[in-house]
Length: 460
Ligand code: UDX
Image (cartoon, rainbow, N blue to C red):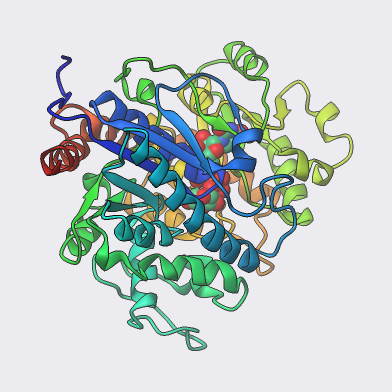
């Protein structure tokens, strides 16, 4: 038996992420970690997604499916509120059937680890006498803001001219540092309800797991751990990037988008160390046309070369002729192997929307960031990147909320060179080391995972 493995009884966890790229990636990595430590981990996704996702490797974890009610053609343009209700209704039924099936086939489930975005799997598990662990895929700081809204401790909408917001465990936040669904609580009612609803039954969960690490969010973790059995288990990113290759570990992620990995890496291989600004806005964010144009011209003005991910659905917003004009200094692709790119020595900074996975990935690989948060939790992450962890700068916007080209140019050079850049790069190295320590044997996250597993195995 390898060191770090706990093998008394092979407990079985069902891992149920919210069906989107930014949620499946970390929960897939968590499943792999459990598998490595001797727990049987079965991933669950919707029937439609299972048919459509691309995996650039194979996992030792198994997959099962449930239904969100849109098995044949996917949810398409279905309104989010309708989609979530249908998923809750059909998902609960098909999850119960799956749990029964696994039990009858001699693989009973000991614990359902479910994404906090969907609290209903806990009710299904409870009815069948199965333990439940809620898994938060966003930062503890952000979760804490939603918790305060849920409990009515942060009153919304904020009064006009509301100045700073003080919440336990968090630095003073400006209204614009709050998650967008809190600041603009009326703009996306379905998302608002989903995010605040993460806490609807959390008191009943056996475990509260968070994809962060203790050292990164010490104060807020300490505060939230007084409320529940909260444990930090991150960063759950592919282990080979944390110098910790797990058995059967291949470089893979579940990808909803196709990418020409070899072309990206070949291009990077030909560039000098630390010379590239990597630019990506994750799997969901849609930039305003004007912002996209400013971004393009900012990259053209910048001294640095760039690798820019523009998803197919965003491609028409790239200014005409830009790609041809900048082909000497830049590569535009529709998707890339982000972990491999961030780990590449040619990359000197990450111009990012600050999705939580991108933030954790850059932190864990020591890549300085230029933050251009778009919506959701990204503004709060940007606040931490610049003011708490000091691993990047947040690009200032004008009165229309647009980051102008000269501002972007300035921010890229600020993080890549000069005194400020040096300080940022030093901090980036510090956080990279702390992230590694957290997941290394005996590190804060590693110990928490071992404790979770030990409890599961002893229970049975
Ligand atoms: C969403 C939300 O927007 C984010 O704010 C929230 O914290 C999680 O869910 P997304 O916008 O896709 O996620 O951003 P992010 O969290 O950064 O996740 C994107 C994932 O896709 C990352 O794991 C990243 O490595 C991967 N990716 C992105 C690629 O593999 N290739 C790419 O070209 C771009």
